[in-house]
Length: 390
Image (cartoon, rainbow, N blue to C red; front, side, top):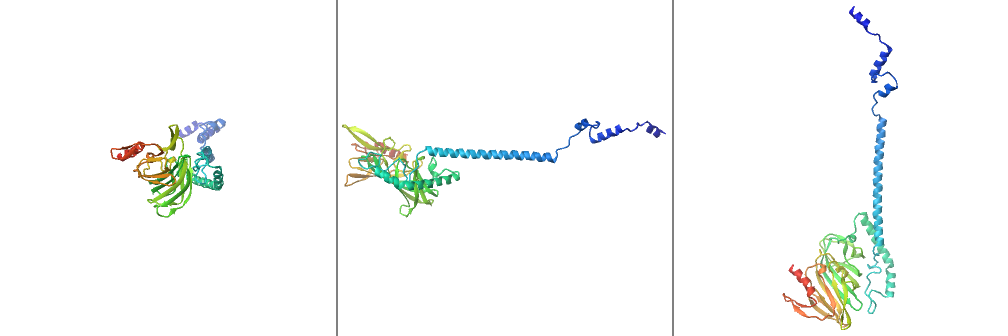
């Protein structure tokens, strides 16, 4: 009876109740079916289509970043290339096929000819003879520079300091001074020690005409063939390109024949003048400190390179020559010229070297160590005396 009474008291199930129960099971929070119930219901999770769209967006963003980086790198490379071309166009002229500069240092003029002006016949003949060689030389130089650029390195002749693969041991320098037209010619033999193998010899040379370059092994062995040589005015160096690399821990002899002007700028080997009894007289003297020895002879013109020097100066008999060291012998020639051979210097840098060609009268004196000096050699000898004390 009790169970039947309870069943009778339970309210009847209506269709509305069935719909509400179904809505609760579907997660519509008991709202009746309709647009509001659909809006309030839980949203489905991200579908595979949405994931694919996100992946495409991320990939597109990454591709755009890479493209921007590539364009930036190309622009930087082009700007660097344009700057190099502009510097080459604004810089000094390129070297000629014989290692000289067009319009720069020239061979010494003949007697009676104005200094610095070669004869028109020689200039025309030299221009015709070296035109084809100059073009070939420029092409080879450009190819080598492009090769170094592909390696992303500066060639050894374009660097501000000399490469360290060679070390000079001794210089043997022979000079001939022509005071009537203010020119001089020279022959320098440099004994080199090879520290690292290389087919390039790079040393300083500025404002001079190079006539010949030869390289021999240990002075007595056969010559090492020189492929070509050229002056590089931007860094004031002479570059000697060999057909093969120099061997490490071997000694080689570099011989260079050259000529240049005795200029009037108080640097390098320059000229000066004075008036005596109404007559103007000239002299040639040197000023190599700090980096002007390269204007007088090809050399390793940096203080780190120290070597010994043996100087010989040929001049007219009406002049005398002086240098750091005393004269060992003087050879008088029949044509009125004299060659003075000076003693070998101690180990020193190039800027300590000095010489003079003049017609001064002089007085002699004796130093504390017993060395006989003239009044004009006191300053030159003081440099050597200072080195010996150090």
